[in-house]
Image (cartoon, rainbow, N blue to C red; front, side, top):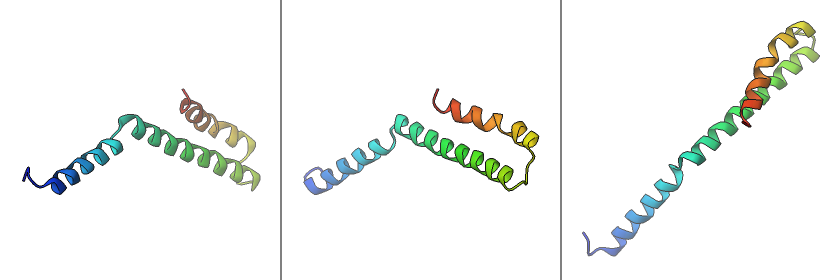
Length: 76
């Protein structure tokens, strides 16, 4: 097995690729980007509901703080 240089190279390539994709910092960044996107979409839905008069201004004001806090927490 050690004499098969192609096999060794393939295994090294596989392990390098696995190491690149398992980077905890990159995974955290990707997760935060997804959460920020979901939060912004939730805010957009609330604003659309208000604009289409499905929510009153008081309801919008009551529901908006949590998504805004999540949005700002993503940058901290």
